[in-house]
Structures are given as structure tokens and as C-alpha cells.
Image 1 (cartoon, rainbow, N blue to C red):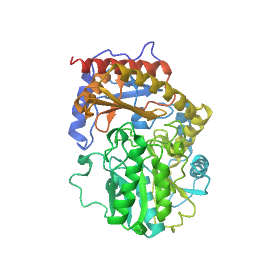
Image 2: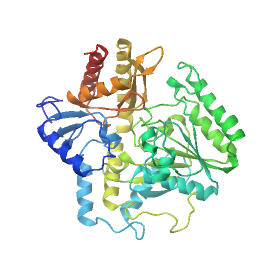
Image 3: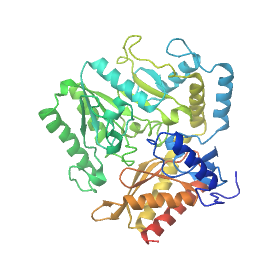
Image 4: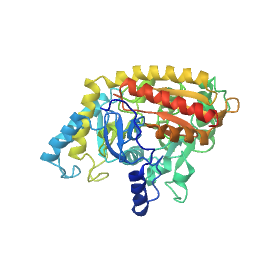
Length: 449
């Protein structure tokens, strides 16, 4: 570990970074959108080293993937050992012991007590695609309810559910038919007009809208296969729903025989201070999707469903690389580390300290409109004016860029939210140093410097 972090030896992007960014633009699809020109050479723990020798504190964990930090020795060792035994032989057509072990572990830690089975893919989007197909197959119903602000992936089925940015959908229609979007209870900006200091009113208005307007006037509930939701919206701005909302969804789904599909791709694997975010509300989903941190840095997605639902026949859905043995080895090592090092509990306890620090910042900075989150999945929403709550999109981007140039790799989400999602085992000194730098940059942007 370096003596002091972060460490900026040349203003980023440095000359080597600029050279690689230029090469990238000539051969890589322009559909990728990078937050800033960070060119990572290597990473260790909670630190990123760029090609010019700068050292950054990682406050986004590779988009919430590196839950146990970068290149954790046990994860690397598990990958090396498995790579020396078996790289691939198609879990679709044959059997691996390691995939069974990961599936058993997932069933053990999944929310609720119902017997479950696991389907493996390569990504979150693939897990969502599997959940969509299983929902329709098992119910023989056609409609899917999703939420505005959600991000579930970019493949056609997953994209049909996604509703976080117009650019993600523009030019790709027609998408999957039968998907109906409803507003999410974003209490700070309640789409139904409830005041921000009454989140439960926002939740109840959302549920009433679904029952009274969607089901009674538009979509026959007996033809709805599933309600797909993120327990905490990720790309939508780290939006935490009011406490009555998810139990209310469960009740609504049960009344109409609808499956509840819980997308834990970003919020799962201990990120929120529970193994799965939905556990904060004591609800068991019918189907759950996982990816990102599940693979420990390697491609792995999973759909976990109640056994009685997952009765589809052989050949109805599969994936050549899903459940790859090397990815499964990394996953099993990651879950063992999270358990042994108590990282779920650490995310909860450290998250409470971070929330306290951020709320103290809110008292000092009018540009901070809202602080919300659970565990180490926290959003800091910036606004131009607290009364109107007008999003400070340009300012949020400027805070992000200035923080990066000062050695903190933090990113934005939603309208104008700074997202705090470091590795769950980040040293406290790094975490709070990064928060100090973020506050410094908020002060600079507030002051118009």
C-alpha cells in the first residue's frame, strides 16, 4: 500500500492515458460511455493505479462489482487453481461440481425459506432475460410490470424493462411487447405529488395507482406474469423506496397471482448491510436476479427462483458459458470472504457512519438536497435550489470530475446523484478521506470556482 492516498503525480488524464483513450476511440464501439478518462493499469484492494502512476481511492467498486476489493488474494488463488484444473466444458450440456456448490450457497443465503433452484448466465442482463422467460412460462401470462427509473440491462428483453435514460432505448423499438411501466415511489421527487417529508404517502399513492388505474383501467391483472423491480434503484439514482412499498407490492402481487421478481444485481451480495436489499423489508420474492459482485470480478449472473416455479423442461433455456467453472470458483471464494470477514455487518455499520457524515455535510451545503441509502449503497443528490429541488446535473458532473482529478474515483447516477459504493472492505481512513475530498469539491462548485 502507498504511504499516502490518493496520490496524483500528473494531472489526469496524463500523457499515457490520453494516448490510450485516442487508440480506444479508433477501435472500440462508441456506445460505451465512460464517466471520465480513467485508464486503469492495475488495482489492489480499494485503490486504482492508472497508467501514469496516479493512485485513486475507488468509491464505485467497478460499478458495485468488487465487493471484497480488487485482486483479493483468496479470489485470485481460487481463479488460478480452477484455471489449472478446468477452464470450460459447457455447464449447459455436462456437469461441474463447482457450479453445484455455488448454487447451494446461493440457495442457502437467498431471502426466505422456500426451496429454490438456480439458473446461471454470464451477466445481470442475462439473469433478467431468464427471469422474464421463466415468469411467462410458469404463469402462461403475457404482461410484465416494471418501473420508471429502473435499469435492468440492455439486451432486448432487459431493455424493455429499463427506463432510466431515453438514450438507452432510443432507436431500438419496437421492444418486447406487453411491458407496462409505472412510476417508482421516489419520495424526494414523488411522481404523485406527495411531499418529500411524507415518503409513506408516496408509497401508498404508487400502490393505489397500480391497483386503481393500471389494473382496473388498462391491464387485466389476471394476465400479468410478473412485477419486476429493484429494491433500491441503482442507475435511477440510488433511490430507496418508503418502508411500506415493497411489502405492499408483495400483497398486491399475491392478490392477483403475480410473481414478484427482485433485481438484486447492484444491491445484492452484502452491499446494503444485508445479503440482499429486499431483506430490509422482510419480503421473500418469487424470483431473484444477481450478478455484478456475485462473480468476484468475473462474468457470472444468476437467477434464483422458487423450485415450484422453475419447472421448465430441458432445452427451454440455457447458456454455453453460464456457470463457467472459473467464474464459479471466484464467486464461491467471494461469498466465503464476505462471510468470514463479516462484510455484510461491516457494510451496515460503516454505512451508518457514512450517512451521519453526509448528513452533516448536508447541513453545511445547500447544494445537497437529499442523502439516502442503506449500507454502502448511498446516494447524495445535488440540487440547484432546495425549495424547487431542481436537479444540479451539471454541478454533479463537475463535482465528480474534480474529485477524480484529485484522486477519488466516484461516479454519478440518476438525475444528479453522487453515488457512494466502495468495496465493502475499504479501510475507513480511505473512505473518509474520499468523503473529505468530495465535500471539498462540492464547496468549490457551490462557490463557482
